[in-house]
Length: 239
Length: 239
DNA sequence: GCTATTCTTTTTGTACTACATATTTTGATT
DNA sequence: AATCAAAATATGTAGTACAAAAAGAATAGC
Image (cartoon, rainbow over all chains, first blue to last red; front, side, top):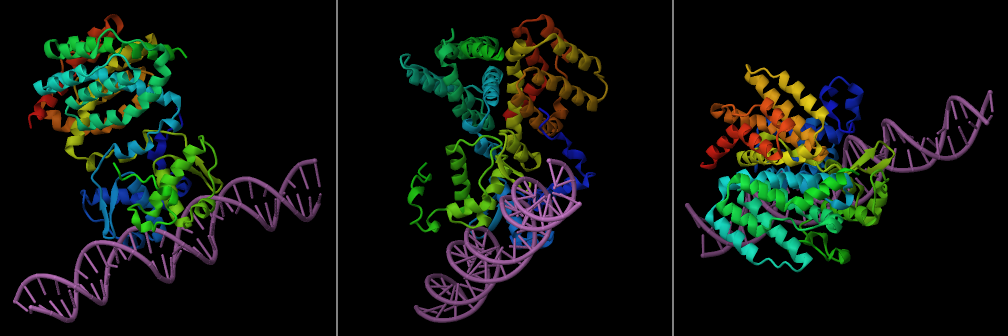
């Protein structure tokens, strides 16, 4: 809990703390400031490594380490041997690189599972704002193809149907966010499997509500559809 | 799709220039693989830079660049002059470093605003699962302190009340996620200001519902509370 | 005079060396 | 045996050198 560092704000006073920052750290910060101050836009050419090194009075090695970090975060890109440019911002790009269920504590995995439930329950209003007849038809196609027999197909159906719901929000960030989180659910689903029972509301039911029902109906329907997952969340809550 | 290289095994023969990947890129990947394969746990000491360099047949420079990237992503930490360790995973750590409204396209900003609405609408069920009497009392304190006069205080109240709601979910990841997204809302709120009208349901109303109402009541209440924001979303949707 | 080709320059990518500094370990002295 | 000092260790930083590729400049051909 207290491991996070909210106290970086009054770091200016603590001189020794500032010295705890390596040169590469400082250069990284300086570069971020610089890009902001100069209002660099995506595609703009950045200063050359040697220029930066000379301007900041550090070796080119350090500059390269700092730039390497910014590259890892997706903030800059190297255009072959031509120079470096500010990259098209993608807030989920770096997120993607860290999402690995194998190195993630179970608590975070559970958190993300809860996050998914919150998201799906919250979709209703935005869905009703953007849904089109064509969306309905595509959802219908997905529902028709569903085969209730195999466990493997069940998960595939889940992904297709719910993925389409996210896509219907016209919210590209939300869509990608969901698709990034998706692989993690497999792990939770594996834990959950023993307790899983299908909810009382099917995908076909949800589609029917989406066509002829109100937003409130859909929220209730989605809640019932997700009931098994909520039950599982309740189950692990006590532990 | 076919960009991934399964043939890194006999990479010794290929001239490195055949790949678009730089040495630092490759070392970064190799290290990620290695940590996974060896099932490193947080706190474990990593091999020394020179050992890695020797093992992979690259210079120490390259290894340092790769490690620097993993550091930027929060995957490894350096313990001063003692060695490097695998860091406590924090999926939002790198996310935080990229969130800067100044370098973000407006479309993403809108997406995140929509994401917020989805989250808040979805909170209800989890809230009712975890809420305690103490939470109610703390919410009450926040509501009582509200002063309806100043615009500045209004935003502060918003943050306090809604932040507390997130905290009540006992979902640490969700909590941090919201607090990271919060600064971005200021920008949207600035756009939105001209159109803003208080919703029909106040924080006090929401608290009352939370105490004595059902989950459905709360969802409806929250929807009305957020009505101005939804209206704005509807407004920018057409553009 | 204009276009195509070649040469030169520029800039990133990589390697190697050297040394500083802090931490741990080892060794020596009382 | 305990304390303090010195050595060993590993990261942090600086600097040089060169390769490779792309852009720009210069030259040759029509």
